[in-house]
Image 1 (cartoon, rainbow over the protein chains, first blue to last red):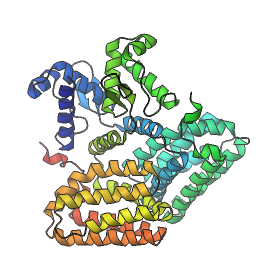
Image 2 (image 1 turned 90 degrees about the vertical axis):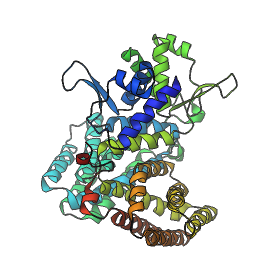
Image 3 (image 1 turned 180 degrees about the vertical axis):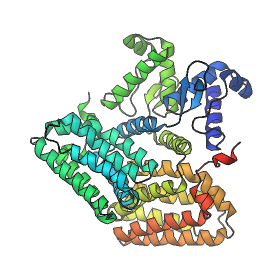
Length: 246
Length: 246
């Protein structure tokens, strides 16, 4: 049985890799696919379930043009989920994640300074301004913070970097939230982040790619060192440290 | 039925996220998990199949200590598969992929210059030397090329960047292979790549992080512009261009 499921998985993978199936396409009906590959309909159904769980396929109902099983138009969320699980299982330490964010986000800042339109930068600037509002609480701030960093990745014009940024950020969202709540002076921390965001926006608006990348790197590095100060915390993995688990 | 499968998926995800299930752990037996969550054993089985397909779980046979369903010790290959499908479905153009590789690989080169041990750099140097052997064919060269780039990511000490590098490279392996075969003078191309690899090794050995990062960027950029020269090719997505597909 697993062998026939694998055959269906491989077949669909090949169809996508070769470009015969592209985003939004309807997948061959279950019955046809089963007879084409000489496997049971149950095997086809299981393979489809696997692709659905990976966000590679979506299923509509009814008989309209959106019905049936289709290749997902945007598997970014599924990628984020898998990268998050991968990061959690991989036992990567926080400094590896910090460096990965620096690699991705300095690249975005760099490209955004060259490529973002003035309109796009106005929108990014609006997010930075909202983050400076004094009535914002931790949840509201964290949400805007994520939105701000992903917005810069998007206006860099590189959606692959943006999707990876989104995925890596998703994998540290929980520890950042926990660490933020434990800060002695969150308000001071928040004011510093907000002013760094403003400096980044200014660098982007003056089209200074080098300065934008430097601010992005400094911003991520200092935030991590403030949030995860003690030696014990910086060397620990994202989830509860293993020796404390049982 | 899908609702109960989702319940199992969410439960396992939570267990991993909270750190209660870590790499290598045995998963609760099917029957127990089903009764714990109040779902059918079929739902449990389907959810496990999904995690297996994602490389999050592995299944052993028999009754020994390696038997049963376990949390995978290393889901890197599964990540590579999903990133590859994501890149193919996402319709990212080659220049986005090139920039993503530059972001990841300049970071690796930078860190490797500071952190790799002399022994590690000797191994990387050996790979570069092998690539200069005149009897190497395209397949052999491409294999060593991938090995070389991933080795630098690993000796940078950041396995998350290494895994992402592996995944992004996997998603361009096929178009690079096709484009290499179509080059008029592959031998000249290959000699240039090999000498750039040697220059990168030299920079790493002299612990010159800035120079190593510059060589890595230049190396990727010139290889892509040589492989994907015409305007039509550089703007096209990885898979067969959509307008040629049907």
